[in-house]
Amino acid sequence: MTVQDVLGQFNQIFIDVLDEEDIVLTLDSTADDVEDWDSLTHIQLVVAIEKHFKVTFTTAEIENYENVGQMCNGVLEKLTAQTA
Image (cartoon, rainbow, N blue to C red; front, side, top):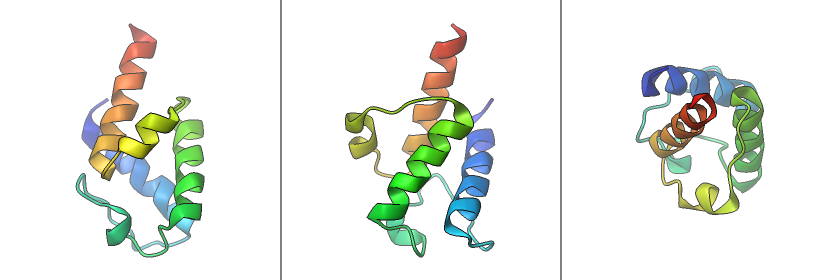
């Protein structure tokens, strides 16, 4: 799985959680770039991502992610660790 594969899956998760069909994420996307991505929906997005990929983020990881790309890389690292 590549970062682009993860990004595509993230995009669908964001569409589902935010109920907005027009979302197009990039690796540089932040909450400022996505309408309705606020602190409450951030929690919903994190939970949906964890459930979808069957991973768990620490509070520190969540706080340190500055954009979607960093979250995608975090998922990839966790998936790689699971298969190692």
